[in-house]
Length: 292
Ligand code: NAD
Image (cartoon, rainbow, N blue to C red; front, side):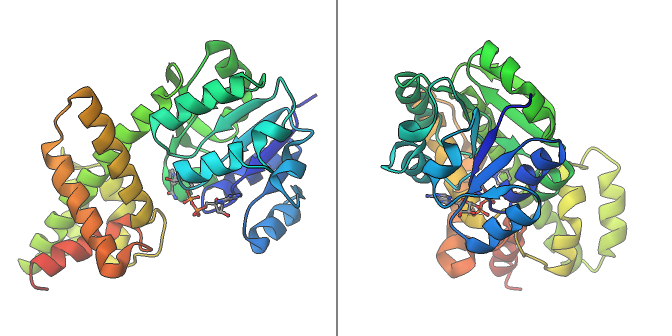
């Protein structure tokens, strides 16, 4: 008998992930703010709930995938929320990217109600969610990780317990630091190559085969080339993540000299009204600085 699952937050990531659980044979009851996303879940064979309370009441496992810490706090602690409505003994897996401290506090508050918690943020983007090949970085207890593993295996490929509560979020913060710096590096190279009159596809092909190659370069190549900045991963969300990693690094005394500059570039794009674009739009910032 497979555990019954409640899924809260059916956005760019949550929708295809919940659908992968349905394909794997799980019963999924979902809630999210947009009606079209609820209709999509029902069409895929899930149950569209009218509230968080209704979605979680019979669930053995509750999975959350919402934008940031304030939304996780609202859906966990709110009057219609998870802690007041899920069964005692349920397992709450929060897959949103939030501050490590929010995950630590949530594990404590949920624990007081007999609800176990894992933080399990992901990397791999919308494509990774659709293809169920996400990297999943987990924080929490080994026994809860073992219980969650079959479910996480239906969503991802690289699934690692990184340490106690909050550790998954710390690793995800490092992931976002690396990705932002990498996108900025690739964007600077693209603008330089184009202004130099070199054939861009040929250049990116050969760069991809050497030490400059990266998942970012391969996956974002067409976004750069076609100036296609439809998200994907929104600048607004990466701005949130640069805030998380900057605060966490300051707390432990780790210097982020390049990360701090890239955080400023992400913030600047957002201030110029580009927060809804894919993070590959860092290219736009380089073009503006280059007078293009
Ligand atoms: P999204 O904005 O597309 O989806 C968020 C969903 O949360 C929406 O459907 C919204 O209805 C729901 N939501 C918000 N508040 C809610 C509430 N109070 N009750 C119920 N539902 C609520 O965001 P996304 O791109 O899917 O990202 C989700 C999380 O995953 C973020 O933390 C993000 O940083 C992380 N992430 C995103 C990507 C990506 O490529 N998009 C990749 C890895 C991680």
